[in-house]
Image 1 (cartoon, chains in turn orange, green):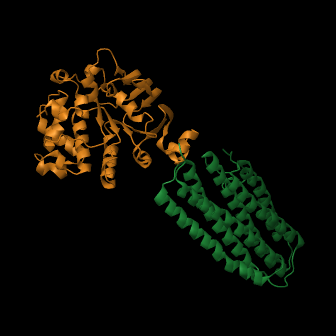
Image 2 (tube, each protein chain N blue to C red; image 1 turned 120 degrees about the vertical axis):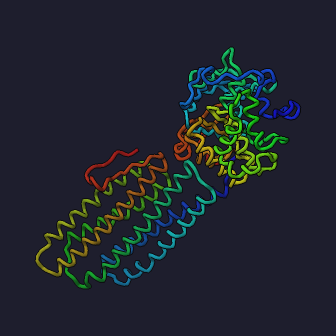
Image 3 (cartoon, chains in turn red, blue; image 1 turned 90 degrees about the vertical axis):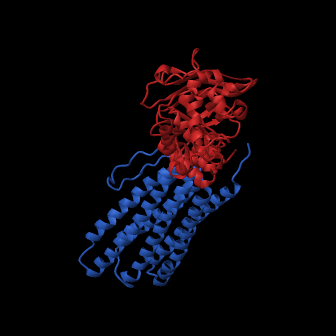
Length: 289
Length: 232
């Protein structure tokens, strides 16, 4: 079941899904996007600028997100880290007055190319948000299936795909006996894993996570972090977090942003033990924030 | 942007002061241990042994403080390097304290009126001066984060090592008198303790370089004592 537009308007899923007409057409597969299936996929961001009207939020960022690695982005509030990752799957342009310049490529595929289907981009580059946002009227099963339906993908075996996604996020054992119950009835941590299952179900190649644990308790946070560690075997993951310890725990490399600029991108171990830039040192040690 | 984590910073500063104070206690203990050897002062030597509890207590205080800080404050970057270095340095302090005790315990064993060899005594006195100077310099290097001062400790340590080898050779050749030979053997052990104190100050110097640069390099490699590995 696809929820009526009025019910989900303003939620990230609808933004990600594009217009109803876009949903109606069958989304191209990876090969149609020029992206090889199966292998790890890397994202390259070059000369990225993002604006909210006159506000220059991201100021010329160049960064590579290596395949099958977790890259964490840290920085004080308002530094442009969420804006930057929303540019990767073209979510940023959904905000009125917002625009982006520069280049984002997935392998050799230009995400901002002229004839690119935005829906397909958002299927291949999935996103998990700060607050768990299951569709309130949908069952657990339909919440996961909604990802498949919204992106227009036809699954030969929907049930099997949903079960597989729930297993992938470690939720299967907890919900297998109540798949028809409302997703909103799950705990916060379970809801977030349900949303990750919805993202995983459409088989993306890159998963963007915007503070995915900020609304979760410590135990649920650790479950999600373990899940991230498992998911990186198959996906390239970019996670925005305010929790520096979380970045230290889950990320292979960490990016520090300040005032819309990329200050430092280093292996996580180096950034938290021997940061190269004094501003990074001052931020991670709490000398400003 | 405002500076944050004042409580953490105060705690870290307090721990560093405790460690630097620990080096002062080592200097006191070393002075008394050397004096007890020079004057064959058994009573003073026993005080050195008893006072090692001060150093052991300081070690426990700092160790507990660092564990607490790690658990509660999760230091990173330069703060993490300081915390890791303090944990290492307080261990060096505890070991140097033990070496002072070892020296003191040799005093009653070496005999009250035993004949002595002037060359060995002179060399031991020099070693003691070098060891004291090195402990003091390691404290200054750590407190001021002075890499040059830290690296200079390696050169000083070479002097102590040289004197240690001299005392060993002299003890072998000291003569046929069994009392002198026995006394000389005890002095070899005292020299060995001083040499170990010198090594501990070099360990502290390595930690100073690590705190400042983030790179760890052994300044003096025990497996190839004649080679000096490059510093950061």
